[in-house]
Image 1 (cartoon, rainbow, N blue to C red):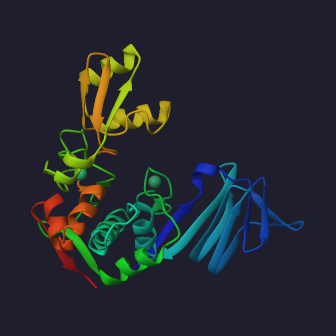
Image 2 (cartoon, rainbow, N blue to C red):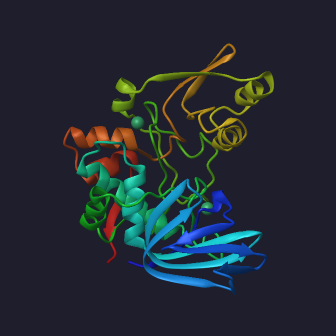
Image 3 (cartoon, helix red, strand yellow):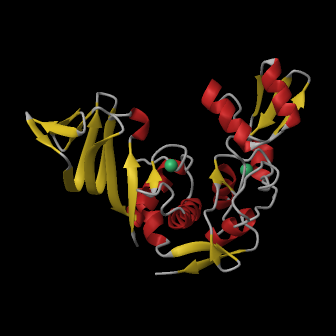
Length: 291
Ligand SMILES: [Zn+2]
Ligand SMILES: [Zn+2]
């Protein structure tokens, strides 16, 4: 277990926030609470953070609020296991059996450990750039506890394992989607029978410029993210597709690299163990205990 520093709510660019009932309003480089100005405010323990009407979430840890770059900066110092439980709760398909949740917990823990210092001043942000979080659900907490200390390694070395919602039938290699992770893990294309059988097809149309780009650089994750930022995240749902005339027809959601959450849940339903699931999607890796 170690401490992780997470920047919260960066997408909301908050100007005011309510923490455990205290309303904090940004005033230039200062914070105002009931007419008094502060440089920095710190809250510890169980935290309820609310922004406007739209956002209310519980956290546990030490929260530091400052004014930075024309918005409030909320940095949460929390322990890695609370974060593992929060990621499992956010990333698991409904009804996923315990073995799938535990596989996801090992991946989340490995990912957090390998992503330390990603942002310099803090470790992680809570957007798609790093990781979405949810309040930990009991099943997520249980999965974190049952896998405490377990990490996935490749040739004895830790790496930040990738996961996505559904691969569409076969996962991608790092090379196939232009994923540059400095060779920390090559990723292999593996069959995913559950996605072959059950995953619905999607069809998308694009304007000529985008269609040309897709033809020239098919299945490139960088391009999929660029389209997502411009046209919305469901514009090009995944990287498993073919171009059919003026249409792009595909299966699956997400980059398709590494762990397939839909496939992992399916394997677990058929009785596969945590190790069997992780070995299927990450050939050649080992699970080690580093408590
Ligand atoms: Zn980030
Ligand atoms: Zn799959």
